[in-house]
Image 1 (tube, rainbow, N blue to C red):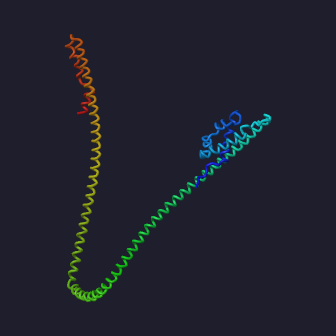
Image 2: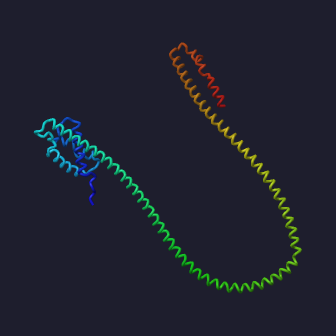
Image 3: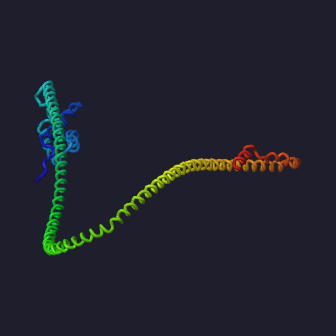
Length: 325
């Protein structure tokens, strides 16, 4: 199925006439000639004005319009034999009609744009709903496949359980016969045990009372031991609390010692910098003294005395060394 054209020949014709009318209004040139028609209206300009269209179809329709407009006499609006005022009026009338048509074209374009936007929104909504339905259908198919698998497994389990039930039913019948036999034997054994129990109960009643007395004594001893352990637990909890307080205090002292260590490291770095600066200054002064001695040989003996103060450490160096110590 062929794809429909984005624009119709009527829309192309209306747009071309509007472009020609704008060119007539904005200039004082006579009606369009073939050269001026191609200069004002081209396939590229027409496609940009319409916003869509096949270049081949636009070129074909544009050739037809050119034949109708230029070669059919629109270029000769000033008809021979008509007075100039009437020709001007006819030209003004034609321009007014083209302007009205241009307004209609703009209105139709706006309506078409709004309709296209509405249709695009509807299409997007429909695509979204279709995609959602497709996803739901895929999920339902997956669930159905999972349920089919579960149903097959359940059927297999049901067959297995049925066979097992038949086997267990047969076993139950045999066990029931054995149970009847064992029940009769158990009744006889219970009677014998009842007689023996009566004899044993009469014989060991005194031992039962003695056992009760010993159990009561052990209960009291257990209660006393529990109270003693409760006291020890309370003491242990107090010691734990004290140890936790000691731990917190030691952690605080450790943090203080760490801060002091960091400050001492910073002071040592500062001291190192000061010592390097003093050494550099001392070397500079010694070099100056040597140059002075080499320049004045007669004052050679005074130079050591004059350079002696340079070896004296500055108060800043002394304070830095005290801080380092």
